[in-house]
Amino acid sequence: MSDGPTNAASPLRVLLVTENDPLYVRQFFDVFFDELPRNEVDLVGVTVSRAFHEPLTKTARRIHRFYGTVDFCRLLPRYILAKLAGKSIGDLAKAKGFPLLEAASVNSQEYIDAVTALKPEMIVSVAAPEIFKSPLLKVASIGCLNIHSGKIPEYRGMMPTFWQMLEGKPAVTVTVHEMVPKLDAGGVISTFEFPLRTNDSLDRVISGTKQEGARLMIRVLREIARTRRLPEPTPLDMSKARLFKFPQPEDVRKFRARGHRML
Image (cartoon, rainbow, N blue to C red; front, side, top):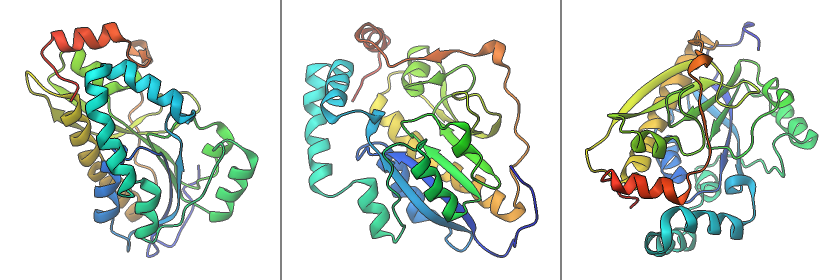
């Protein structure tokens, strides 16, 4: 990273990397694209990769196993209607005039060369399905940020919203943190807490944290645009680190037994 002089009057040059999810991650971008101050932040590119970076059939089997047959059948029409309505993040970005940058892998040399040509000051990950390796992390002149729906390092890894609800936390902590080669291990830049209800739904909480997370990221980017440097990160106490995998059916049974719903 470099803290060298930059014309502070010009918009902050930002590249976004995300996954193709028309249901939940899309809600982040509904807010982010609408409320982003374009005179302060210039999106020089948006990369939208496949969810989980795997074939759609494998993702469907994973989601069916997670939600169960009844909730999967309730969720599927929402997904189909969103696809038919053109509610993909890529379509939304194009409609807003933001350029798309395709990638078979964000760690490929071809993609890194394309990103380098854009001269981004910041790279921002929003549910990106790949871990960024060092060559990509070094491209942005100021740094790279990730937004994670969990307190780190206690809730690193997959589906942090689910795990915080399962463990009875009073709120879901959404974290913007610096990206480093190790997953969810960079210093914390900013957080906010989304209060949970005694009997809540994963659907409501994910939607709410995505929308408010977009506003948190905008606040962070506006501050960086003003100062042209990354705020001093709060280092993580890795002695508290846990790394979660995708929940299994038995985890979902415990989640429901606590009084929560999936949808």
